[in-house]
Image (cartoon, rainbow, N blue to C red; front, side, top):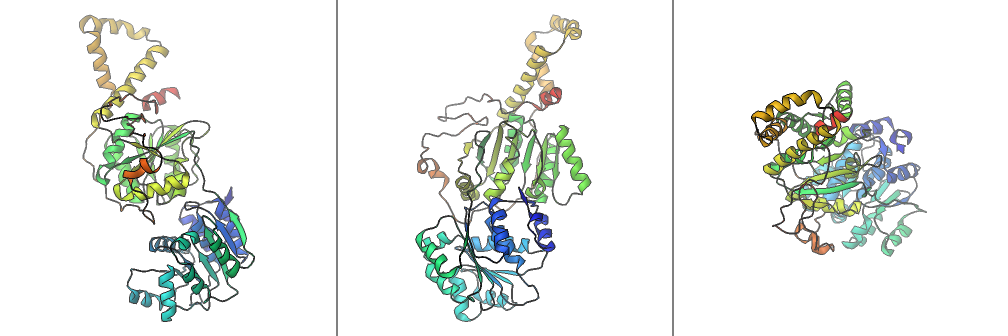
Amino acid sequence: MTLFSELGLQKSTLKSIERMGFEEATPIQAQTIPVALQGKDLIGQAQTGTGKTAAFGIPLLEKIDIKAEHVQGIVIAPTRELAIQVSEELYKLGYGKKVSVLAVYGGQDIDRQIRALKKKPHIIVGTPGRLLDHIKRKTLRLGDVQTVVLDEADEMLNMGFIEDIESILSEVPEDHQTLLFSATMPDPIRKIAEKFMNDPHLVKVKAKEMTVDRIQQYYLEVKEGEKFDALTRLLDIQTPELAIIFGRTKRRVDELSSALTLRGYTAEGIHGDLSQAKRLSVLKKFKEGSIDVLVATDVAARGLDISGVTHVYNFDIPQDAESYVHRIGRTGRAGKTGVAISFVTYRERSQLYVIERTTNKRMELLKTPTLSEALEGQQKAVTDKIIQTIESEDLSVYLPNAKDLLSRYSAEELVASVLKIMTKEPDATPIKLTEEAPIRSKRERKPFSNRGNNRGSGDRGRRDFGGKKRTGSGDRDRKSNGYGRSRKEKSNNQ
């Protein structure tokens, strides 16, 4: 484990990294940043989702002289979506140092970009065609550039941008530093490295893979406005021992924790705006089991050391695969099994595929549970509790009263009344959550409708709420698969 604080970074950069909620560097970051800080050319071979933006962004930002009002670094990206994404992350990383970052790409008003370029940003992130357009117009001059980053070079090769890239690089001073990142290294990319790079250092990192043997991964296709009801029904059915629910924003976390409490769950939220005392108080309650559900942002959950988490619910799908890995890694620890369920809207389907491809793990589709299934799940939890009490507790002091009741009522009536008293019936209290904009991947992937056929899984049916494979619409087996014990059972076993 390498901490960012161990990499010799400027205080302003560390402040920004801490503000983003990161402490530990990913493998590509830990291996790349020290080499890049020495000014050496570097080739990073890594997939999306490994943290490569910060791997090249941090050393790029470290070299920026904010007093010098000219372009000092450029990042070349294959698509406008990636250019925007990279520029946003560089802005966050450079926040403490007050580095100005500008994204330029096709499809945006060029006059607007020209006006922004006149403000002399420190870093330009752009697509090859639009960068070259500005160079030809002389609205972008690269004579003072110290660092060039080629992001997803193989993708730019596939899109026919190699000649544009060579034209751009010919405008940059010979003594600049080049950081090239690519998932694969085809011959044309190697030739660029040979032509424009000086004895580059190679860093090769594979995407972090899941401990698939211990974490069962599922997703639900659900509309934004139906996500909360689906979540509460899953909680009722699966009765997790300890669960973490991830929301994308601080507002989402606050609203979710309040809504869950209103529906009768013991839930609290943590995010970056909480005081350290409040944060520690919430975590203490969660670890002790006095609250069953912790709602958190990615930032707040970074570095949490919590054992016994049985379920992770991604109420909002994360923006990258690395965040997904961190989230679901909260469960399935110490040899125990865990469950991770992601809520995916129609517009986020491509992001799901990117996560699956990067983590090399296909998630199974769950059907959205109904109210009757939620009630059935709660009743089963109570039934299990009753059976456990009969088998493990001394009931002699209660038997005389039980016999008296049996003389007046049938056994079925008595058991039914106990079930009703102990069962937490699903609550339909109206809840209003502020809608969050959907996360979409930088490139559209295969549609859901082709998932089974395209990936050799045509015989994979939907799974019900317990993970049981459904072979057809007539299969209504709703038995629990033992995803977790009831909350009441947990408290008695401590």
